[in-house]
Image 1 (cartoon, rainbow, N blue to C red):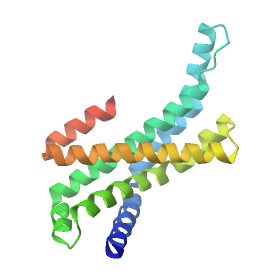
Image 2: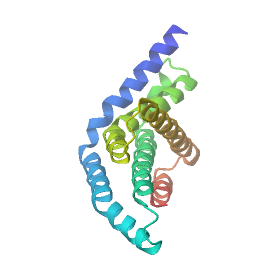
Image 3: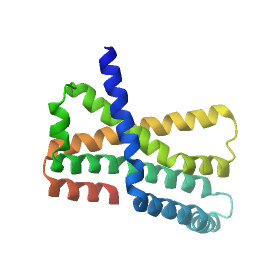
Image 4: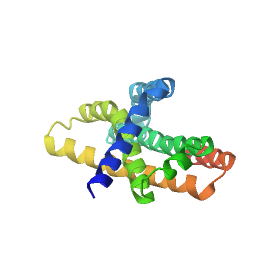
Length: 180
């Protein structure tokens, strides 16, 4: 049991350390988020407000949607990264190590989820600030919800990688899912 927990910890740390490999991808996502929050959110909110006589503000909904979509994209990317490792033979190598398959799967899911959450945490804090959610309970609830969502999406993406087993088909499937 102790060895399983240590291996689980090592797998989580492995996934978290891989974050900085994708600096350009991360910068593109941060730029996208900034444009969404800084420009489109106000524009759409103004359009919706005019349509409904100024009674409805869409800004808060848009902020949450922008954050959720970037968390979804980064979580799906963790599965895409696993597909690349599958093609490179790294997954087979990991399976040849004295690691139980269950521990490997859980470690990769938790590691990918935590890495995605860490990458989007500054954006979440910006959204919470703009929403005016300053109480501790709201912040903790938002963080827990984001982590659970990320675990679900990383689990889905890794399951798809192992189900499809073809690099090209995985690329097409992830492209379709990310565009939805």
